Image 1 (cartoon, protein in one colour):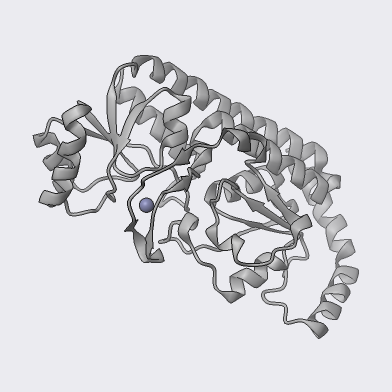
Image 2 (spheres, rainbow, N blue to C red):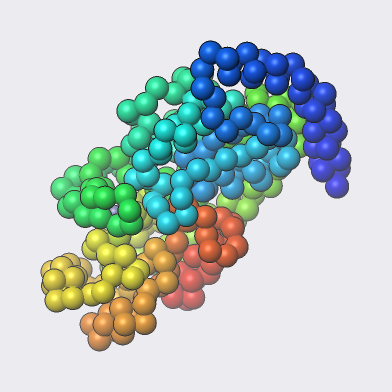
Length: 313
Ligand SMILES: [Zn+2]
């Protein structure tokens, strides 16, 4: 209740600032085409993916507008923003990036450097480099490969906590009047991530010497942090498994006797059955890079951890 009251005070303060800000925006609009101007007058925070949207919204509450522009059916890691979206990023008050080569598009456009926060910079010296990954496609983004820096950083929950810290420090600078609420909210988020990390660490002790297969190569940091012996195929949850897919899997299983496959989303019944015939059970760990169909980042992560706890009791 207290933080909510503080935030509504802040909203009033910000509203009071509005005329001068609008005047500035109007001046800017005279010289350059400004797209989608801030309607609320609140600072505009643009984010690279859904986990950062969730972090920023939970931490800043109503003090800022958080905008995540990638469409729901695309992987934000391979998303190519259109001109309007790029303009929105360029006009933002704060740009939260995952880092770790997550937003490929950002290399090709000029962003206001002073506004950009690379939330993974605290552990950049510990990134995982992926080699020899095959090109493939999923969703409308076209062909891609997972070669280069692994970028699903936040499913190592200790790394997620460092990213939350970077988000919270940037938000304190952006809205200093909300400092107390921002830090309090960030602390509660960190506590929840810490709890997930502890549960995963307990699961990891039961995973020792347990070979696992993943449906897609997005779990590098999860596997490293929690000691998973994981190899990947290049499937989607709704891939219709043909002989080629199963041959790829059998190639892995020949030297890696996995009993479980980890999926990014709920696999089709047919796929579950085909794997069961090979002696593989299915479990979902959704990295949640985009907005989930139900719940939010935290409930999805809790469900992920619960599913692994259940699979490895
Ligand atoms: Zn892929």
